[in-house]
Length: 208
Image (cartoon, rainbow, N blue to C red; front, side, top):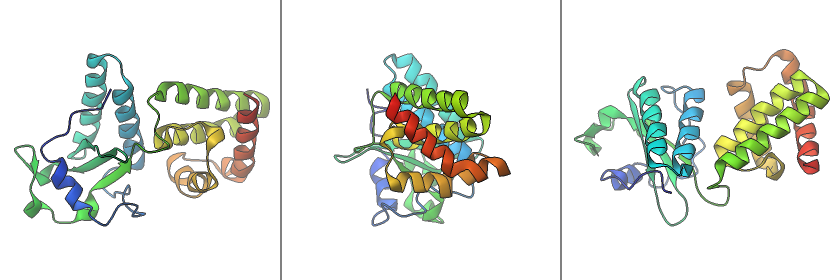
């Protein structure tokens, strides 16, 4: 089930980012907190994977409510290679269509890929598997490692829709250096143990 049918403004939104795909700042925003972006992405994946239409609508409505607090809106742009979650300020819209002349700073827009090799239509199963890894680490190695691996599980589920055990070196690097320090609100003890936590997560993933 697709998240939503293409909207009239999708072509215009794509034009905003011509030549910018893969830009390191594409999913950064000083206006929308990182934890909100993560939740918006999670709700988007849940809506895409929902079997029931009313359930999918409920997820998208919750997503809209979250973004409304920051005067942003969301669409999913679909193409032949991958789908992309696009967030942009409501002020760019007129009658539901992006107005190019209203765009004061293209960097205010946020893009995050949903599709491609890392996409999973069975997101719930992936997320459940990753949570099980975090729980197993917590039981075997204690709360601190458990909290760290919980953050890793959420990162892999929400950002890549992939099992923890299939994380690439680049994805783990992104988690440790970027996602973990600014989204997990780690204690000093968690920071000190994060490398070991990642190792334990991979070991547990291999055993499940």
